[in-house]
Amino acid sequence: FPHLAEAVAGLRAEGHRVSIDSFDEGEVKSAVRAGAELVLSVNGSNLEIARGLEGAGVRVVVIPDFGEGLDTLERNVESLERWGVPYFIDPIVEPIGFGFMASLERYAEVHRRHPDAAQMMGIGNITELTSADSTGVNAILVAICEEVGVRAVLTTEVIPWARGSVREIDIARRLMHY
Picture 1 (cartoon, helix red, strand yellow):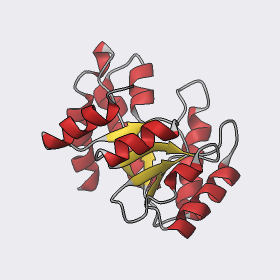
Picture 2 (cartoon, rainbow, N blue to C red; picture 1 turned 30 degrees about the vertical axis):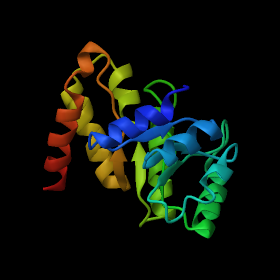
Picture 3 (cartoon, rainbow, N blue to C red; picture 1 turned 60 degrees about the horizontal axis):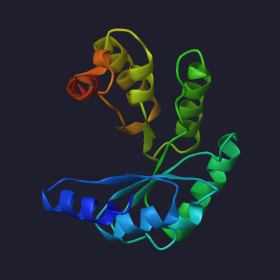
Picture 4 (tube, rainbow, N blue to C red; picture 1 turned 90 degrees about the horizontal axis):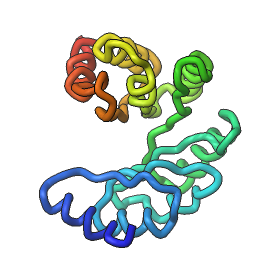
């Protein structure tokens, strides 16, 4: 994306918070220099991108290595801790029928291992891929997030039945808090 830095700087100038979702080192560095605050995602394949981000006001989302389990996630978290880089842990939620329950177990296990660490969950992966009432799906997902220490969610509103998800999640978040 040749105009990435320009786009990020323009969004920041308008008062928006910006994240970069890329494993490409050049794109990540360009976006961060232009003001991106969140890097999605880092794992063993690109963890070195995070080095030098400490104190820069940037947080990364750390995930397991591709096709691997929580052991690689632990190793990646240890590196970020050593470097002083702020992070969210994302054990990766899988769609219903493709490992959904096992992925929820990973979130619970990460919460047991790191009770004070902030986790992130891409709940849009579930809402968008489940042809059902998004209000109920989002409410259940946010309830799960509340119980397993997820402090940030990522969602979309692309598919027709997920339009309004951001509002629904905000309402569910407040309900679960109270």
